[in-house]
Image (cartoon, rainbow, N blue to C red; front, side):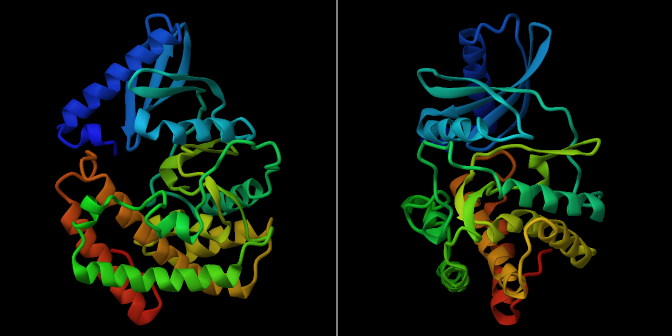
Length: 317
């Protein structure tokens, strides 16, 4: 999160986001706009009711404005997403107005194997999108982009002090394995391209037979195989995980065939996703969803990564 939030309470943060959203609505000439807060991390998301229509409004602090601008440019060339309508810059923030997409998210405990298989097919089709029209700088989610000090997830030096030496040692050993896996994949056209980067169930809408993806904040150039890992990482605690993983794999490979080599690398990349999530937690300690829980989250995930290093299997509680 931006430095401006470091000393704010959760209520003060939400008030700041709402103030910026109100300014944005005024600038966008949305008459008598009513704001409904949805969520926030680096960006705040609001549902906006104005002029007899419904919109989505995303607000980013100036510090993270370039990410929102990149997301705006990416969305313009995609289908099955909320269409970007307007991008404006305010004194302290950047705002993007989006069309509203009808649909429902589904909890990990309730999602069916058929729905997971459909997500796999959706993701494979997304990986075949023509990216020739993209002309703005886009972040990289290769090894350096995920784990290097200049990467999109890496915490500041101050935030890194939250990790214990043991945790840092385990993270280093895991990311070494991830680097070997990515080196094995290399960066050919069939392995590397535009990925969503954060396709969790909260970022997927189901509407009849259609699937729509949300929140392209972490979209960038990366390994296609890695793009399966956010969802698999989220599903790991489910007792029926093996069936869900098979369903995602079947849906994906029905469109983009993969090999046994890819399947063998998947578990390591899921562990790599766990490291990225730990970096995110440390960088967002004032986020209302994790405030006061950071130490416990890191301890649990470190234990799980240590078990992965011993067994080759990541088991999440």
